[in-house]
Image 1 (cartoon, rainbow, N blue to C red):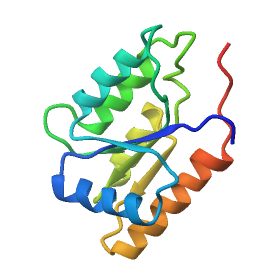
Image 2: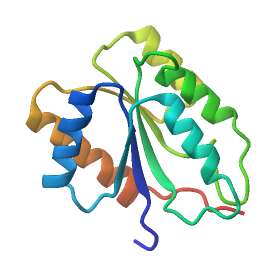
Image 3: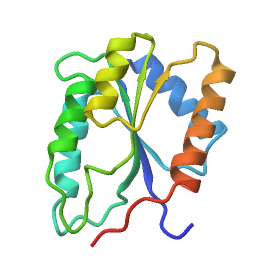
Amino acid sequence: MTDKKELYIVDDSADHRFVLESIFTKFLPQYPVRFFEGAQDLYHFLILQSAPDYKGILPGLIILDLKMPAMNGYELLKLLRQTPDNKKTQWKSLPVIMMSSEDIPQEINQCYQAGANSYLTKPLIFEELRDVLKATCQYWLDFNRAPSLN
């Protein structure tokens, strides 16, 4: 691994963010993770990263909660895929995984049509959630090769 990328997780539930943060702190400390409580928070942060003078770590993967107030994960996904790329960022090809506690085929299809790379149902059992996050991070942040910036 040459350049480490950060994982961004967006979830409006403080309780779920706490559980996720516990998993990353105790079991997956090798993955830098940043949490956002809403889709608008993440979108504003991503716009700041597009600035030529941004020096922080760029995202390698975004996990979006589907059901959120104000702007939901699906709306953010569509907006993200429509945001113009620049020399520093490639929003159209940045891996985005949708997560929801619901398994509704129509919503799953909409997410893929909008550009999601994957759709996962949130496991309710702690160990299963830990295992899903570990496999997800290993694949997308360790094994997957993203397109290079031109």
